[in-house]
Image (cartoon, rainbow, N blue to C red; front, side, top):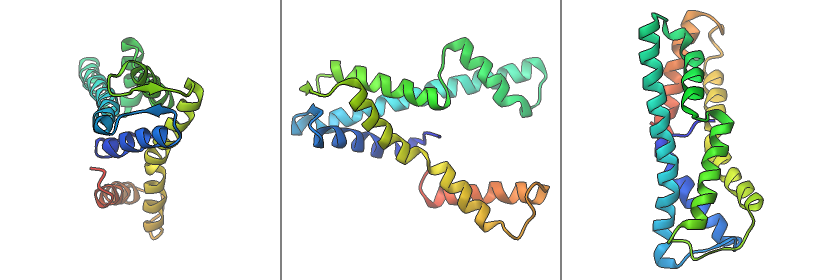
Length: 172
């Protein structure tokens, strides 16, 4: 699952709407946009932290003289050192931050539901938007049936097609 900056406003809007619709939280009509911006800020901060980890990873690769094939391995090391959660743990971290913020936010009048209930609803909204990569992969593979997977030509075309699909869906 990958968090794209362009889908953050939609995710934030759907989270607030889902929680308000189910009466898990109460937000004054004039404060809804602010509550959505609070949720978006949490996701943007996570992306900013991820970018810092990526930069540290690039620097470490250069320092150690490694090539970029070891990027994910070194990134895991950098994330562990910084206490940065990635993947599914990252999503859980973001949701935890959102739940904490809902309790202290001046934009949320009242929180009625318990954490597990809201966590489940927030996760459902996020999963809907973050599972886009699997759909993109499936669509790209469908378009490349004429090439043999694993060849250099397939790898190059796969990257091109994935980028085209992401652009078409407005993700980049």
